[in-house]
Length: 147
Image (cartoon, rainbow, N blue to C red):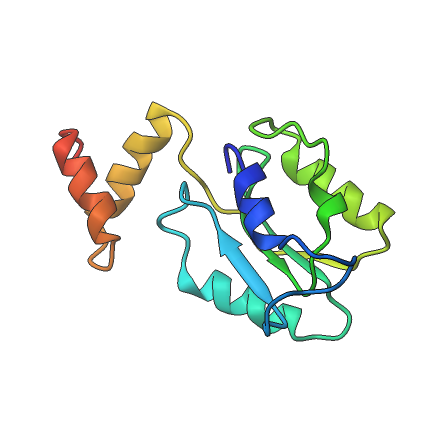
């Protein structure tokens, strides 16, 4: 994720007390808008992992050093404080923060996101071979002349 700060703040709801979740959800999984081809199987696997009692955090690393998916069982704002978003250290720093907080984090397989024009061209190539491609992403790529 190029700038996951906003995404992280959505996942980590503002709570009056640490560990107090304002929703009825026991598990939350979010993906970044820059990973339109992330397979649904990754999201399903993240939810399955989060249902285990020995998992607190699930991260899907991106090839650029960020991550494409984030899953939590309860809010952990400390995971995201003072992260240099958009750098190749985001994933590693988040994993370090999880370990420092005593959280049990697991990782999915790496996936690619879209941050550069080269990434956009790769996305267009990938979408050209898939029928189930995201409709709106495909339309925008057509407008750009990439499909």
